[in-house]
Length: 397
Image (cartoon, rainbow, N blue to C red; front, side, top):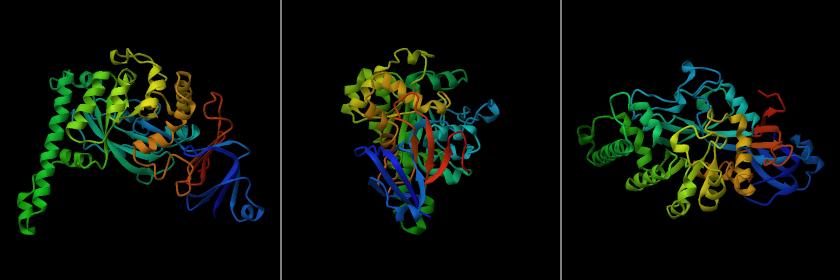
């Protein structure tokens, strides 16, 4: 049966707010967005959901996390975010470690997060793929929306992880060199495959390069089918990320980008995008020494910016708290809303289906009792594909 969400203060994000309206949902998609109240016949023929005058937003998107890859309340047994045996592991697939039973997914829905990006941590120079997932589901494959990127890490984390293992990287120069080596090898590998595939069928097999799973994993990146997500905090590491991306013609985004405010005009010139966060954080290491609330205030004025929790660095429970922190630090309220809806959807390539309340898009919503930017805002309902998956303190399974 079709679903009707009515008596709602609609906040479509990409269009003006509707003080009182309703949304018609059919086959898990938004059929129409309307002003006023539905007629009685429409209510009779649909599964009607009275929003009680609450604020209806598109489902929130956490653009960078490790949700499902590190078990809540567990130790090493449930920690699957870093394959530290090798600094270069682009072949690692996040879906193979994703645990839908992790309680963090309930916490995400409780916080209004319907979509999250998850994947490898920052211990490795190249860590593995990043995937966009629905936060509702029992089987990882059914939760998967798309592969969106490959994780690259610059700065202190890969140095701290691998420098005591008697192999590279010891320095930032080595980190950049390892990335270039991997990308160059993948580029040559792709060129050989492409050349071989143009030969007569009988000659292709002999001309193909020996199979290399690392190179194979980087081919979608070189073809710009997915993007490079660079873990980078300092202005110098941010510049290195951009330098490498431009050398190889990569689509990229800057994750954390903590000192982005120091080089904001340069980022604008480069048409960069950034996923900032965690925002509820202390200066726990040298590369965070210049961490400032100015980042959240300034970057959205210059470039496309999203907010993330980096769960479990900041637990996904504090997603809206992170947004309020950004606003308190000077981020414009409308910019903050876009940073958890349409902006992350654009950055990870799902904006045709997610990120705003528009006809044709997925029927993912979050219903709040007041504006999202109010510290005391409460999630009343979280809806995925037109189905209530969280309500009050309970959950519809």
